[in-house]
Amino acid sequence: MTTSEAELTGRPGRTAHRAPTPARVVDKAQYGLAAFLVLVGGYVLYDASTLDDAFADQPVQPWAVPFAVGGALVLLGVLLAVATARGDRAEAEDGEDVDLGGGTDWRTVGLLLAVFLFNIVFIDLLGWAITGAVLFAGAAGALGSRTHVRNVAIGAALSVGTWYGFYVGLGIPIPAGVLDGVL
Image 1 (cartoon, rainbow, N blue to C red):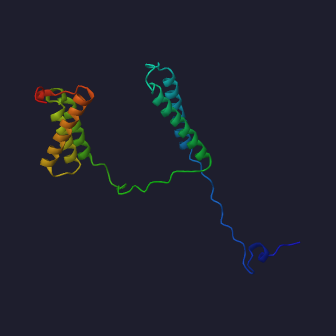
Image 2: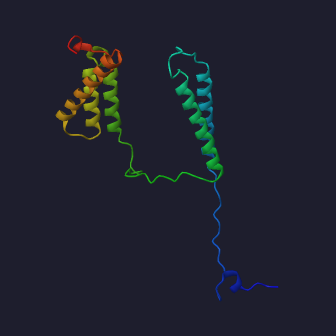
Image 3: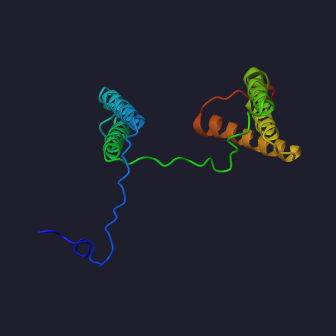
């Protein structure tokens, strides 16, 4: 007994066309990332298990957060491996507004490097309040901002604010440099 085309397609005179199924490509790099997540999560869980208990009256012990983070990393690694095995792949990025054909702007890289080196060399002498302002203003200028007075003002406000936040708020000493006694 033969089956006619009309019976296969439900429409007389039409042939059944089936789209070819695309070959499933497995991104093996995702397996590497999944294994990395599981290994890091496993190490965090192991390290958390070696922590001592704190005082008995504390509701959250020191190992609570590392156990949560380690467990989350292991779970995400396993879920990524399962998703990869099922054929899920991340979509390629279009590069947004980046010109992928353009070269590296070595001038900008050099200016940023100079600003960071200035900060490293002079932070003990001048202090964070001054070098932080220079760091912000210099980085903003290197990246294209042409409002230098505003950059220095914002940099000074951020650096003094972060100095007080760390030194007074958190008790972490940050070099005051030449402004020692003023800040």
